[in-house]
Image (cartoon, rainbow, N blue to C red; front, side):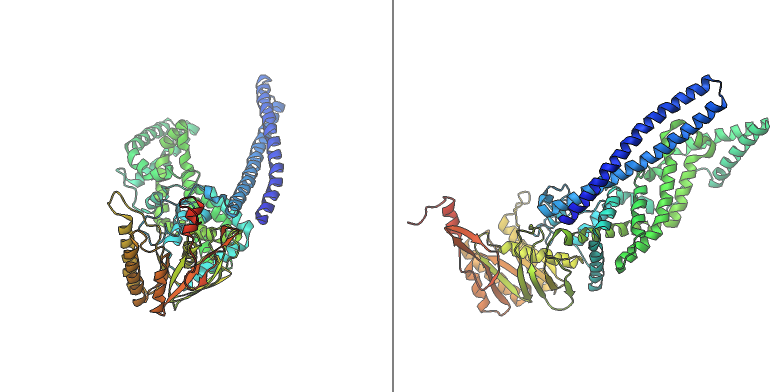
Length: 592
């Protein structure tokens, strides 16, 4: 937290000076503006004397300079304010107030996803809500894909790890580029805009394009020559052509406006993209993936700047009289449409790749913040062979640093039966394993002192709920999920299943029989995973299969109070606490 507090202190000092300068420039602008109005009035009333004219020009020049300097000063104020806001957001990730972040990613996965809800990857108080710092639509989508459906080879994981490590090492750069990306703002229409811009279909008009190209040139030349040299015939011809151009503009306005429609939704955003790209391309990267992204964006920079220039030309539509004059004299809308058409022909095939590169950079940037807001992190070694997870001090990244309890793990193609009493840490431990595997698959750091693991697909059965609309009970929903685990385990060699409180929705006799059958079948087909349970009878399965191992979490009592250490131990559980908790809450009477 101290590093962010130091940056805040630094920028608060700068902000105070910048705001003071901005205020001085603001008042000075007002004074100079009043002086300019006074000078103009005096110049007019004095019969346009040379002194008055030169004084007015000098004051107007001074006013223009002040406006420019004030704009620059205000930009510095906004930058300092933005950096402070970003640092405070990172402090929220450290102090636990991140649960108030607005974007929880609840819209990104449904209940059928292999692990999204069970491992708190998306949704309220999720990992997405905790770590997401993306600002663009492309970044958010890519970060979600990396968390929910990462499909990287071992080589790609290693390359991504290098990028994450490089970005996490320079907090100042990470915050700077986060600010510039944040200026773009996310819009849900971005995918549609990209589709429209990548559609290179040419503009179809009823008027031949060469006629429009040469008509506007001829109109301007004839009107200029006719006016300068007093050639009435040229002037009349120019006026006739201008009228014809006004007619063509009206006749083709629907086609042209439809073609330019995408541009109307882009003002003020493309320029922000250009600025963010400039920050990335000005940086020298050492990791291969960041170098590749930089190369892609270097190509994109000029093209997006060119597209931004086309958008700026359409801004004249805000001035009705000027817009009318430009179309009558220069066929302005046609001119802009032809520029867009040429731009699409040249760049449309590459546009999506540019935006996706920005999205990948944002996703990597989001992962890179984890080492700076979470203690005890490392880059895992992801291996190709063996169903193994070896970790030292493996912890859950969503638990506060000062409250997190870590455990060592030495899992190798086994089935863990994790037993223990209520609130002892069984479910949290399984979620810890699951979320860190998800991070490893994405090429991210994990919350461990060190970790080596296979590239596992994770499939969970934890938060099972009924579905009243479909008439599905909780128990039936769990049966369906367990069936999916059995089928998928038989198909995929690299699957790790996590089942919490297996068959808790039925009676003890059926629960034990069903759990016994499922775990035995999973062991038989070679599946690897973990099952938590309160039913200590299930622990006896380890006697019949060397692949089944017992581990437990337990509690102890100090001065009549229950205490948990959340440490995993070998063997079946030896303690229970349900009766104690019921007595503590007054549900049942205490022993006499």
